[in-house]
Image (cartoon, rainbow, N blue to C red; front, side, top):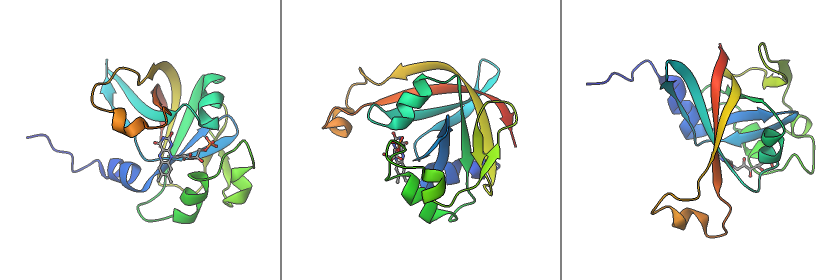
Length: 153
Ligand SMILES: Cc1cc2nc3c(=O)[nH]c(=O)nc-3n(C[C@H](O)[C@H](O)[C@H](O)COP(=O)(O)O)c2cc1C
């Protein structure tokens, strides 16, 4: 039987949300995968077409994921998950502090519990996954950004 007991950070990532930073913007995401494939640790973040974050990721080679301790930073997660970086500086609006990433350009969110810095290796649009149409009534589909982890702390 597989033992996932040491993977608490995954629970907080999926249940309460994490901060995904692309270029100088920060967005809340609660869907995602963390795992090891091809002997490489990878993080996959699903980002819908409409997000400003998608545009920034498409202009970037990397992103960071900052995972708050379970149950913390809920106000900031709410702001970064409902406002767009097209309209405002969400760092300021959510009172978040930038901390320079170690191995990629850009920042992580200061005060989180766990961090991944990722180099984007592939982008997979969700355009032919049978049975998921009900999630996309408006056609605003997810794209899976597959990032190779180059720093984790
Ligand atoms: C808890 C929570 C989880 C979210 N997860 C995702 C996600 O996994 N993928 C996504 O595209 N949007 C997700 N969103 C919505 C975006 O965070 C939201 O649309 C945000 O305003 C986009 O910001 P941007 O336009 O600056 O990229 C989530 C929102 C919340 C509140």
